[in-house]
Amino acid sequence: MFLGIREIFSARGRFALIAAVVGLLTLLLVMLTGLTGGLGQQNTAGLESLKADRLVFGSAGSQEPEVSFTSSSVTAGEQKIWANQDGVDSATPVGISQTVLEGSAASPSIAVFGIPAGSSLLHDSVGHALEGFTELSDSTVVLGETIAQDSGTKVGDKVTISGNTFTVGGIVADTYYSHTPVMWADTAAWQKIGHVNAGASQQPADQEIVGTVLAISAPHADDAALTSAADQSGTKAVTTKESFQGLAAFQSERGSLQAMQGFLYGISALVTLSFLTVWTIQRTRDLAVLRALGASTGYLLRDAMIQAAIILFGGAALGALLGWVLGALAQNALPFQLNLLTVLGPAVGIWAIGLAGSFIATARITKIDPMIALGGN
Image (tube, rainbow, N blue to C red; front, top):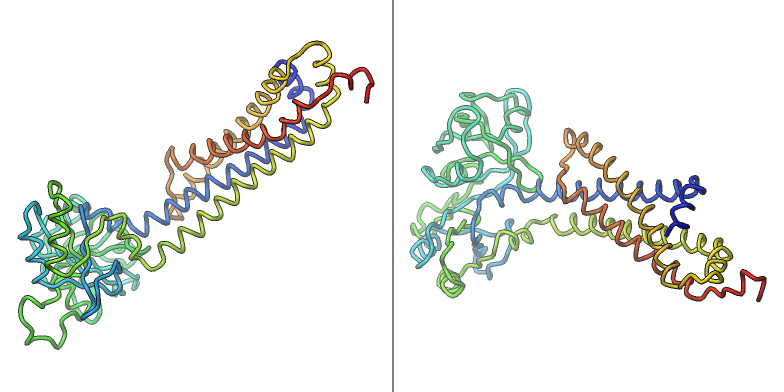
């Protein structure tokens, strides 16, 4: 192993070059991983904030229920069935729609989450109000901080949404749905904004649409009870994570970014493999001398692998450090997730994959003939 370390110092230029390439690949992966996490969080944070054990989807008309926030709707009758099920603590209807809020300064796009007035779901999701209060009514809404800033709106101001005027009762911490900041309203206000139940004044009370999904709190319910409630109500219950499949752009967006990550990991392995293959060929005669002096094949392999591990570690560590710095700056302008996992994960991945490539490249050491050192063929 002393030969490998000495070679690093004697050939600083070429080893610095490969370390720099590994560092750049690590930097790209850290940035891409952070962006993937940030975009995913901005897509699903609003749903995760509901802290539901299950999200229940209803059917659109006479169709079978499916996991789709676009077509799902739940009725008061379906909500009652779930609320009365053994093991279910609460079944809160959540109406979800996307529209534009007309404020005094601008008209930003928003997502509207409609929940029953008096429900604790808003407080449980985003905590205390930053300004004002979190109580909802059919004439009062609560804005996310970004919506308030973008629209130039303060507590007590009037805003117009889909032709309806509401008073801003409070401002809370941001959460997002499908890349759009969330505004909270009560169920009646959400129905007005989305024109839900319009022209259906004669319908039975149980058929009234009260939300897009039901947020089920059932920490002690077994799967059989949940399946029974879904069968009785003609709905479909899934976990919050499974519900992400109902977001139109979630899978395609995440799949594209993860495919790019996969290509970068593959490229890093090829770069390491190519460099070390050439380097091993160049040092064949030196290694043959060591074999002629009695060095074992295992010793030479360990020497080469330790040399590769040091170079890969240096490059990956440099890339991770730069990624942390640039990620911290990117958070101010982009949906970027910066934590130990998004920084150390790619660095460890690059190091491990590079090491695997190194082993393949240095395996030819086992075939080195010590006769080469003596000028033999």
